[in-house]
Image (cartoon, rainbow, N blue to C red; front, top):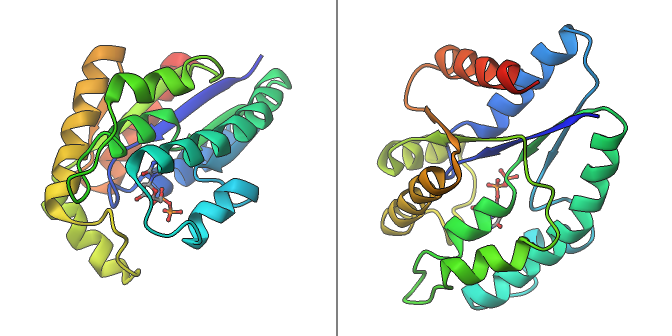
Length: 197
Ligand code: TYD
């Protein structure tokens, strides 16, 4: 039996890098590792990423993320049952944190968002929350030079961060201070993973 390790955090906290480097370290130890992410890059995930849905409400968007998650969960369950360590960059806590935050006055209820995923998700063996001040992470995202998404603004990400910290307390996520140098963050991440494997 494998495991499911989930990385969460606001944009620019270094989740994808931490995920990739953790995967490399685990592979060096001889483990079978799979790195994956949500939104996925196929089917509904690709549709979400394309922006083709246009300006839709937080509730409607949460249903799209959830539909993508349904398909993705099946694939992750299979990999875990084959004995793989699956590292997933974002899972249902992203919907709970992002879609419960107010975007132009519109938001979805956190309990409703959690109730959407509860019937079908594979509960992660650990959720690692990379936490940092959005004022700093927005600068990082800016340095990357990517097109600004509707989510990348300070008031919105400040709410998302607070929602994540609330979820971490409610559900026992491991919170890692991501404002530190990448090596320190990675060493904490690896220690957390080794404790659950
Ligand atoms: P992100 O992890 O930034 O993807 P990438 O680094 O590959 O571009 O995810 C894209 C955005 O989608 C990010 O701003 C967070 C948002 N998101 C939600 O709002 N809800 C969700 O359920 C998920 C999975 C992502």
